[in-house]
Length: 307
Image 1 (cartoon, helix red, strand yellow):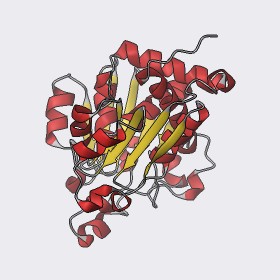
Image 2 (cartoon, rainbow, N blue to C red):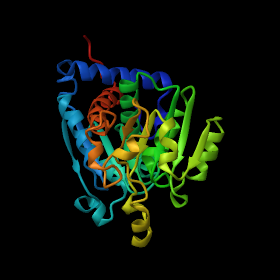
Image 3 (cartoon, rainbow, N blue to C red):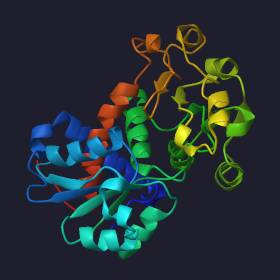
């Protein structure tokens, strides 16, 4: 039995197989429509979510399975003080696989240690968000045709942004990757990722404050929102939330084939006027999220579909 706690749980070869499977699902949805008939996915979301929860549920439904679960801690026995370990022991009696999101770092690992079914980490605090990373990798590979020889700008909340942390860890395993880290001083990438991931793997990177300075050199611009829920006080959030706004004028500075990704939800860091730009692929990205989660469910349940 395997769990997905981090994008590093899969080797590069396994990632390629997973992304190949996701591409096949995109092209041949009918082939997989009954692959998980009789299987149940539990979505254990202690934190609010739209895309991550619904895309996991859509993935299982598209595979012919069924779903059960809760969408907030208040609507679960956590409100009565039940531990994560006891919750997952119980849910293991009801479902075949579970996707879990929790505000505390490491909570999904606690669940995996006590579970008798595969656990998918659907986000644990500011730590990891591996299924979003799989979505990002599928989006980039499908639209760019490669996951190597890329200059990637990461913009916004690099301190608390778990999607950013997971994506960096996944991409450093590919050749000729460069990062441009675009953030205010207060939201810089944590030092442990700079030292333990980027420097240790000899990955070129530079840190800039102005988005305009970075745009002409990028193959990918990965925008993130400033996350109100990660701030300790309202004043700091208000000061940071409008620091970066991508608009039409800034897009004029970028390469004609640069892609703009965003894990969503968007607040105001990408102007709606950018949505019609063919380089803005964040809604396509949300669609790829269903395909890759379908592939992940099949992989963790060890289900293969013959032609």
